[in-house]
Amino acid sequence: MNTPPHIVRGLLFLPCLLVAVWAEQPAPKTVTLFMGVDLAVQRDANFYRVVDVNGSELQIRIGRKEFFVPTRGRLTGLKVDYGLKLAQATVTLDGLESGPTYTPANDPRRKFEARAGAESGAQAARGWSEARQSEAQASLVAAQGGSKEFQKNYEDIIEQEQANQGVLNQQLGSDYYSIPKLADDLALELAQGNYDAMEVSFKISSPVELENPYMVILFKYRERDAKEDDVGMLIHAKQLEPIGPKPRYIRVREGGLPVGFKYVDCSVHIYNRGTEVATNLSSKRVELSREEAQQYLVIEHMGAHKQGTVPASVVRGGLSAAVRGRLTAEKLERTCYVKVSKDGTLLGVFADEGCAQPLEDADTIGVLADSFFRPALVEGKPVDGVARVRLVDLAL
Image (cartoon, rainbow, N blue to C red; front, side, top):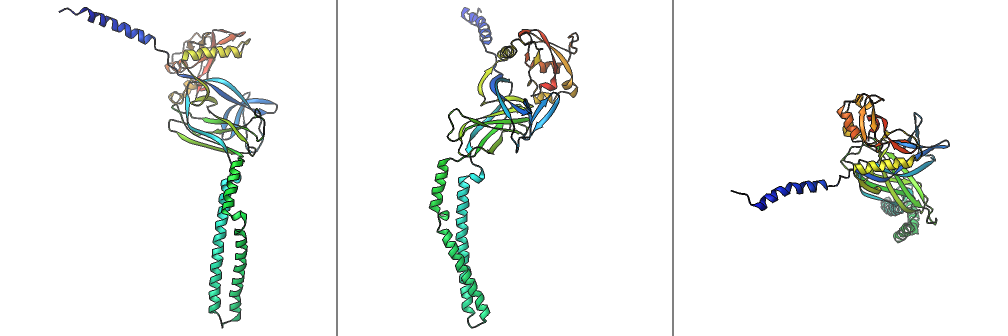
């Protein structure tokens, strides 16, 4: 039996159609370009980049030495540098809320509660005094005909409680204890907006575990009656517990702001081992393929060293906590040498600086294949080069 011609044509055409559709599929967007922040802290006359946060102390590196700069109870010179960054990990910030608030001592609601509580206390004290007076009067009647000294004791109690009630009645009649006046004062203070603190809250999670994270919150404000472009900034930096897939709630309240300030803006930046990671709320966020990210890196690298001569280098962040946990200390600490093309492509991994002995280690090669590289530059022009790499330095 012969197969109909139209069926033969369909069977022959179908594989070609599948190949054509597959070839048009775009490369996956696995890298995020975003606007990040680097902090620099002043020491003597110079500023040094913050490489980590320990508690609330800022860690900097001068030469090969590390120093911790306290931030509590002292004035610390800080500088904020904005710049575009690439990240292969994205942290999720859910339900981010930020805005002005009050310190406990300045909170109108707490003041209202304190005054209302004082009014209730005065009412209770007056009731107790009246009860004590009634009890003393009944005891005085019962003591008629008895000891004069005994009767005098009850008369003194009655006189004292009457005096106490006079004072309490005077207090309760004042505006301080007036519930309508309390409500008016509360409404007035809330309308004035005499804020002196900031508050930020959110839930945080990450599909890739961050072992040594910290956050930097940039809270922008304008003092009362200040000009539109006169904006101040409160910087809050704090070490965090490890971040994983399970969301954790973060809440920050920081005082010390000028009374009556106006809220302008707030941004939250998350770092791990000193490297900033993207968040779902990062400014100027763009999803890129690996090829697009590599092209951006080369262009950015050339722009930063227009006439410079620098060696090839690897970009931090290519080693996740999960992969790091599977590698031996020897592999993490070992120095290897990577041939990098002028467009940042990995050409080979070697055990020696002369690149004569190829490294035969699948784990190391796998990590480096997932990493990004900056090419060597000679007077600002990209050339093939060699990058000196330790896997431990790539940890995310």
